[in-house]
Length: 261
Image (cartoon, rainbow, N blue to C red; front, top):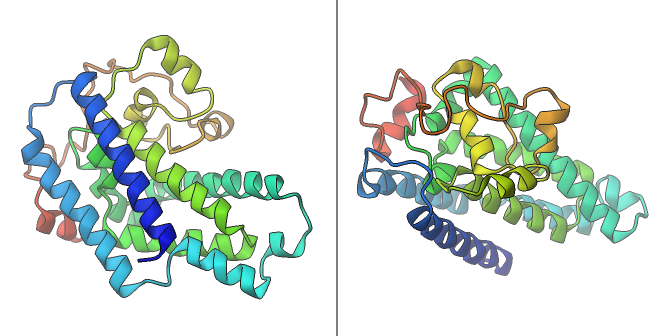
């Protein structure tokens, strides 16, 4: 495992531990299922995805793609002479916009939705839900990000920073954390907060079509997909998908088979 991969893993585990502790101390919602019923499935899926990419697709990692693009001097930012801080800013902002549109398309295109809906079958959204993605969706996402990194010629450090932000903020905004209203209001001017993203996990289809962002909150406002609060309030809203909420959705085998049902 490379040094950047070890660094990302360490930071991911640290952020996971902090958010998990915050959920225990400052829970927003009470769950009917215990962690021991949900966490093994979500965590085993995350481990499966990590091993799949590491063993079968080790070259399909955006940071490694950025390294190769820099060696070959390929991509726009390797051709244009821009200040390093500006290259960093361009990379993080454009990649975040790409992830926003990718997420939106995964909801709009039926074939892609079959993959992405696994993420929405979790009826109790918490930090582990941020890890609940089908391996085929993970592979498609890596292809899209790697292609964008290559064409952009993004600096390696900028890509590494974006990957850390994406993982960390995804765990944060899926967290079952109760933030004071004034802090939530200020944070969501810049980043996606748990209350903001929870709207997207509503069982109501109209609310699922809002708040697609993972990092920056501006895209939903600028592109007309922002909804401030759920219609039924955070305590009264139902999460997940109506068609799967009565099923046992926690086993690894069920999750791997889900898009083909």
